[in-house]
Amino acid sequence: MTDQNLDKLMPFKRNFINRNGQQYHYVNEGEGSPVVMIHGNPSWSFYYRNLVKSLSKNHQCIVPDHIGCGLSDKPDDKDYDYTLSQRIDDLEALLEHLDVKENITLVVHDWGGMIGMGYASRFPERIKRLVILNTGAFHLPKAKKLPPALWLGRNTWLGTVLVRGFNAFSGIASIIGVKRKPMAKEIRQAYVAPFNSWKNRISTLRFIQDIPLKAGDRNYQLVSDIADNLEKFKQLPMLICWGLKDFVFDKHFLNEWQQRFPEAKVHAYDDCGHYILEDASEEVVPLITDFLTNTETTLID
Image (tube, rainbow, N blue to C red; front, top):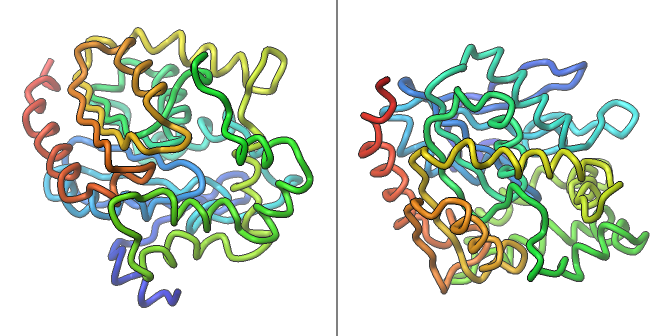
């Protein structure tokens, strides 16, 4: 995919800050109360392009590319610690750089739930609204088993070869992540474009390997702490939009969100998959836009 084609699909200024020698890319469009959108794996800020186009008319839309993803640098392990705590540190550094410290609406997807709510647990007073899209901020639900594809990538050399050598995770996700109809060719190309070599697929694999499943795993305690802190946000306006055909973040994850946040507004789609903003963009983007408009008065102390 050429830069020209990408600019046409995602017509936003490219911004960077230096994070310990690495170029950390972010979108920063519009003015108003801040909306911080956090992507997961194996996607990047491109996932939120349609939402940014809608919300930036009335809000400051901030969308980082995690290090190793999208337009950010893709260092090897000696130059970057690919772990959850570091991701949260990066997000904190970006928002400090932008002086965004109040009235934040968090929009989270996939690993973005853990990263975003990890940040929120550090600064709960800064968060005013939550939009939850096929994600988690707690350990794997008891009724849910780790999918075999993730187990393979997390635990085996074969998984490493498939993910880094053949781009199996990003490539397959762009196919099975939508259910209503296949992604257009140029959209699918944009999703996989940043992950175009063994070197540039490092984050895709490290995200999988960083999944904590049992006490003693790196970040297991951090995930436990993030989950324990979720109750601090029970009184906030929350919108949940969910694709029920997600092979990872399925009904078991949705059920846990609903148990923890029974007052949340929920829109679940039984014909949509993981990339809910692709599958149901025409429905979900207006829902989020209306949610922000209708809850704006809650931001006034």
